[in-house]
Amino acid sequence: MKAFEVVSQPINPQAYADLVLRPEAGAVTLFTGHVREWTKGVRTLYLAYEAYVPMAEKKLEQIGQEIEEQWPGAKAAIAHRIGELQISDIAVVIAVSSPHRKAAYEANEYAIERIKEIVPIWKKEIWEDGEEWIGDQKKKPEGEKL
Image 1 (tube, helix red, strand yellow):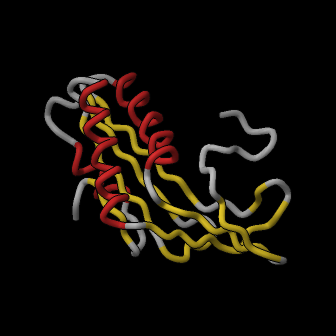
Image 2: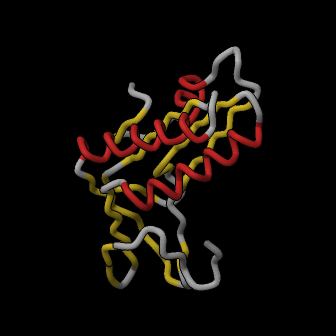
């Protein structure tokens, strides 16, 4: 297991939290992104993720380095799953530890936004009546705030 990786098997969030837990950490935040069933009133059956794994893992590691630079004392671990994911499956996990909770929360949110911006992972939504590759991961469904 690596601190920054793309995997094809179910993700165990606790394993990534354990990677960042250290005696000097007063907080560990753990974010899990799941496959949701409904988007804009359309029922999703499942999602399919693809990635250029070597580049994706390099970009995940870059995000970890950015977090350590912006929040001194913080340490991150990130995993993203590829392949076919069913409703409620975990697609991504981000674990961040830091001496204080505010930095851990901020760095964790920063990580998910950076994943959407720079990591070459592509998502295909499969519905009851069609499917579509979703290009802009930062674009939110109508009514959702950025």
